Amino acid sequence: MVDRLANSEANARRIGMVESCFGAAGQPLTIPGRVLIGEGVLTKLCRKKPKARQFFLFNDILVYGNIVIQKKKYNKQHIIPLENVTIDSIEDDGELRNGWLIKTPTKSFAVYAATATEKSEWMNHINKCVTDLLSKSGKVPSNEHAAVWVPDSEANICMRCQKVKFTPVSRRHHCRKCGFVVCGPCSDKRFLLPSQSSKPVRVCSFCYDLLSTGQLTATLPNRSEFYRGSLQSPRNLSDEDDDDDSSD
Image (cartoon, rainbow, N blue to C red; front, top):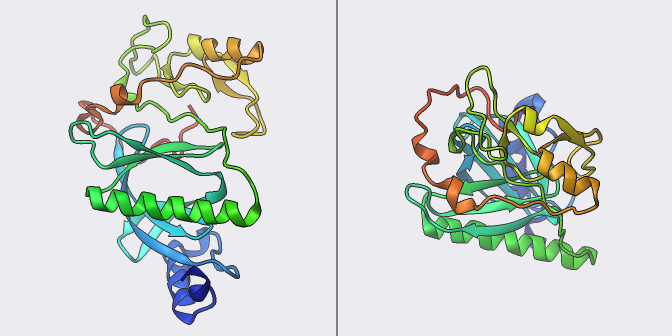
């Protein structure tokens, strides 16, 4: 079916509409053989709190952006090559339901659908696209993925030293290797992670020691622990920034 749609006028119009919604700031999406499989709104677990994002699934890429005007205007376009994607289901926990992880070497995050059926359809379509791409290219699935960041609201104290309490002065930082929320003193080292950046990035002291000695696997947080309660953050946080734009 994808092959039949690849060069159809209907598919070209649909992709053109997506391009126009992102405007001049978005990258062109029309290339030979690309097909728009589906689209919809998913809740993305961002650094500060969950936020609605518009997602578009193509046969070779996953695109998402901020919703300015539903079905008319989106910004902050992100494009993820599906060949690098691995997805894992997340167990329901409180108000966070119907979720899964989207993991890539450069960025990993959790998303949530409105219903279990919608989750199943998204995951099945993504897996089918990834499988077809890898089959055609002869490549193997990526075994390296960036850590999913622990949301700010799930850490009142440094997750490494367990001593420093976060305040407006003592800021939260994220280790790029394990995704933990850590204090400044516990994350004053940087290490080159080529899949994430061409420059050394912030890592916690624990991961720095492992990376420096060639032990590349750091202990990751229990996901069920930090997803719990993220929808009821007690702090009054701005909507202007999330993990897509953060440098910490």
